[in-house]
Length: 151
Length: 158
Image (cartoon, rainbow over all chains, first blue to last red):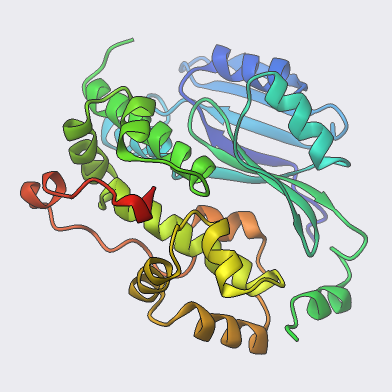
């Protein structure tokens, strides 16, 4: 049986810039930074509080993609249509302040939600991510049903 | 690094910047000039380029964003329709109601009543926001004149 997510992938436009953004702006660490014989790169970073997870970063193009595929991915990335999902933080407002001060672009400032506090930011390549501070009700199905259950 | 399609990509990135500005500032005064400036485009070319990239004019996108955020507030917040109207950047209740009905197919009051009966969808809000809520944008006809002749936003839109 599957127990957890260990790798998720995101497209970026440049490996060095991607490493710089995730380490210097978000405080992640680099796990892998390899080039295979065929030129394929394997570059992963992880939030230091969660070393069992890796975010794999890929620049679209050879040897992974034919040019038509790469062009389509680049375009989706540029338009802002892609995301790798949601990050967790113990304090959304504090993290929002910290990241904003380092120049991270937020689309939505921290807002109260039934499951906690949530903000939305972009990386410089165009991916959007949610930044979630979950409350004690977030994983309680009954409480969520009640919170989302209307009047 | 130059490759075929770099110009198109630059345009898409510029339009993303403008659209992100709309997403950040929809609740305040924002006009086409602000958006064009964020993209680094002239007014006229900005409207054309935005429409080419996103399939709807920037004015239409702003309206849909305001209506989408209004739907979110009507679902989850204990606010009146009038309060929501001003919170999402409209200046008059009449214009809010008619724009809302165009986008959502019912009045804000009807939407609020229904939402309170069923409760908000148990989906993370960020995913609702980033997907622009129910229904995708209708593609604007690729008729150049429609994009260019769009009137600058009236005072109700800014």
